[in-house]
Image (cartoon, rainbow, N blue to C red; front, side, top):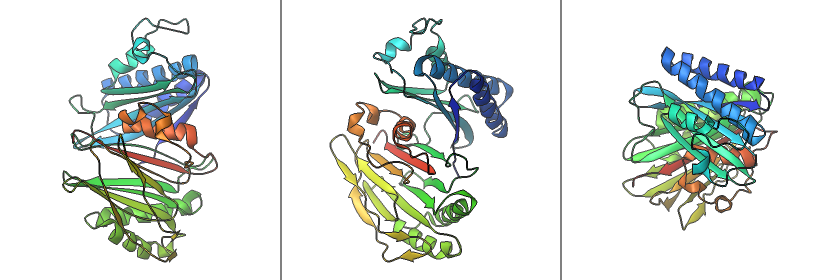
Length: 337
C-alpha cells in the first residue's frame, strides 16, 4: 500500500523510537548488518537535528524500490527557524546550537542520496535515501520520472483509508491516488480493492481503469479515486477522477488543475471521462487526498519545485495536512527530458 510511518520527535527519547522503527524496517527489507548500522546512525542524527535546530518535528520513514533492490527513505520535517544559508550549515563544524556541528554533514555522508530545503522562519525539510545495495542509483526511474510520497493514517488509526500506486515503463507512467470513504479498516479495504484493479489493468487508459474500479468496489463502502497517465512519447497527461482527489500539473511557467467528477466510485458515479493536457519538460504532477488542504501554492516556496519530489510532498504534508483525516500526497517529477 506504500504507506509511510511517522514518528513525532519532540525530545531525545523519541530519537530511540525512530531508530528502532528504522532498524525494524531495514531488517524486514533484508538490509545487511553494516547497512542497518548506517540507517540507525542516520535516523538518530536526523532526530537530533530536529530537536536541536527545529524545536522538534517529525521523521517519516518509507520503503522504496528500484529495479532489483530496495531501500529506505527518511524524511525529516520541522517548522523551526530554518537556515539562511543551507550550504554553510552543511559544512562540518558549523553550528548554531553549541554542538560540534557535524549532524547535517554526517547525514549527507551516510546517505546514498540527500537533499534539503529550508526557508528562514518557516522550517526545514530533508530527505535521505539508503539502498540495500551499495551500487544502487537514487532514482526510481532514471532520466524519466522521480516519485515522492507521504501516506499516513489519521492519528489514532492503525491503517489508512488512503493509498497510492504507480506503474510504468520507459513509454508511460500511471499514478493512482485513492481515498476510501471514512477511516479505518473498511476504508482501507476499499482502497485495497482499487489498488488491485489498478495493478491488474494498468495497461489500460485511466478512464477504463476507473470504470473497472467502479464495478469492483460495489461490495465496499466506496472511494474517491483519480488516475493520471504521463505519456513520455506524446508528452501528454491523461487524467480521470471521481471524488475529491486534487491533482495539478505545472512547469516553470504553467499551472493547471485537473478536473474530477463528483461521485463515489463503487456507488454513485454519473460520469467518467478523461481529459488530456500537455506534459512539460521537468514538469510536476501533484495528487493528494482531502487530508491535504487545497490552499497551498508552490510559488510561496521559492526553489522547492526544483527539489526532490519527496521534499515537495513532505513540505505540503507538514504545512497543509488535516490531522482529523488520513492523508496521501504524491508528487511525480520529470527529469532529464
